[in-house]
Length: 346
Picture 1: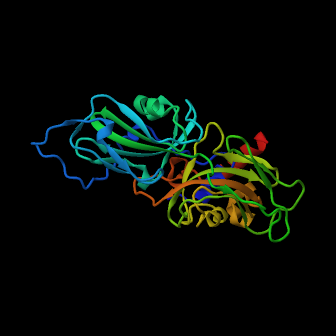
Picture 2: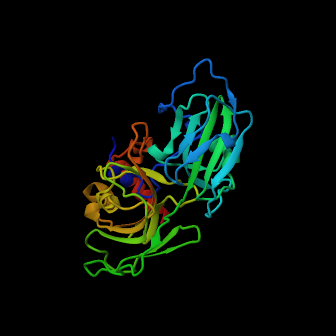
Picture 3: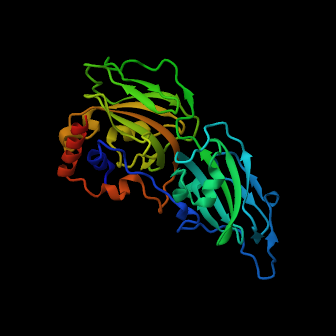
């Protein structure tokens, strides 16, 4: 496994490897067997409607789904089980979806993002497929959708639309100074939740790792060795320049492994035990950022704004950021080239 500290050094002027998904996730290559028995040959198919399907459980948690089997789906049907109040999913935009899909024939679980972690998608037919795209476009964030369709097998799907930004409560009286008296950056937000970081001009950065909770989430804690879905923005203190951001239009939230020595040390420490829905500001001194292996970045203090969107125990089939193909080249030459390209852009 490649170390994400090295990956960030390679990509220090670009966003972390994207979390990509497509319609092949439905059904996925790795399937979890349901405990429900398969139908016997004497069972006749039941022409089902949405009224025959019972879904219990709260939004953003794994649903319990019951229906008569084998279920025959003649036409796609959709209903909103929970109506969200957040932004609508727009064509070409981004979506963070937790999808639970079962076979209507025998109850086999094809996809379970509530266990494996939600996935970031682009709202494009090429990413979602025609059926799922048409089902989800226009749906509000915070919604739970029940959808049935016949796609080689009858599928019963429960889909939750999760926020793409911190969803907790803003923290009042955020400290303006680090414990050593150094000034902290300020963070404002655009209407879409994108952070705007301002580093104090001509001021020395904090000498130690300093974290401020800007928004406190009320979700589960992010534990060591869990995977987390994050939005983040990285800023160089010395230049007050953004060098990577998943809020860029062309980027998606990333999935990382926390507390397993795969992130830079300072960011790892800041994320561990944080609650889902939080936004933090982290100032990472050079020794806990890229350090001696960072080439031209070895003396750089880094500033991060991170939104924690979700967390889950890692699945053996998931590929986290540190395991992505983009982590292959972590040579000093590659790191220096990335730094040079960043300097040219600035």
